[in-house]
Length: 471
Image (cartoon, rainbow, N blue to C red; front, top):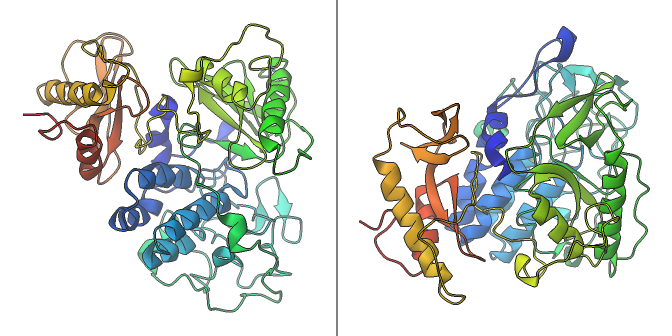
């Protein structure tokens, strides 16, 4: 769906508004989790690896919250523990936890101020890039202000370093995983403080990793336990947070209804303005349009208290909120938003294939193919056949083909979308190709960038033979 924006954001940060910013420091964010994903596949993680990899690398974008990278790392650790405590996955997660974040204006990125769920991540924090100011942070904060010193430390020396790279900041745009294979978990705290020992026990972190909610977030996915529009933090207990999350999402969406592009905002604040995703930069909202067919909205998290701000289809937003038990639709005001039980996963895993799990950064389409008319029990095999048929058609599709506005396809290994009667190509990230994939929970196919092995595995899992094209 909205992942049409993710690939571009994997290598490009937001443009500096009004010429006020010094320079952007960016990276190819997909490279940060590529080795982890391969280790995950080798450990038997299968279809769980790629969506978690995508969720993780998008947290390196400049607009992500200070704890989103840590939250993603916690989920990566959880999966590693489920896969016999795979040591490579754990090591690579610890390194990812310390990867420097994009910065649009050459200032340092604030540190998360809460302990991670997993003790395996305790005391770890991100490096900074060398081109970022060591003493000025996002929002104009200076060293000593909240968020400018890693959690559990009183100071940090040298500034900008991390446990995996204790000598100081890393070169702009580089990947920590390419510089070292030692996460530094046995090193000193690098400052005059001490590492926090308040992380929850292993039992606390045994929550299934998020599936689709984060894979469909917009370029600046906002996942918060409190609203970016000043919504009070939820006080619900762990046993009833789902309903509270739904109510909190509705409250946020009500607030968003009254926002305009000229509304006052706080630096870094994230919201929805109209149907677009909005982030406050230099005191004004910068709008990022959602992909065609999707709108911006707050949706409830599934695995913990909180909400996220995403681009998604209207029907899926309604379904997500209704699944929490909160009545009234997107903002609580509707009396007619009925939820068809077939629209959501009864296991409440938030893995509905409205959001293909394997997307790695290119735009995604989730339209059912015209040839598919499966029965309730046989749609998976039909989905596999339909994906093969599409892939066979894509093999002969040239970039100069005529097309219908909004049409999506694969040309070569690149994702293609029709704009003004011509295909515009978006290359897939390194190690992936564009292909049609079968949906899992309902009839239809999706078009996404994925590894060749995963494409083959997804199609084979439907029971059809013949590989990607069936030929």
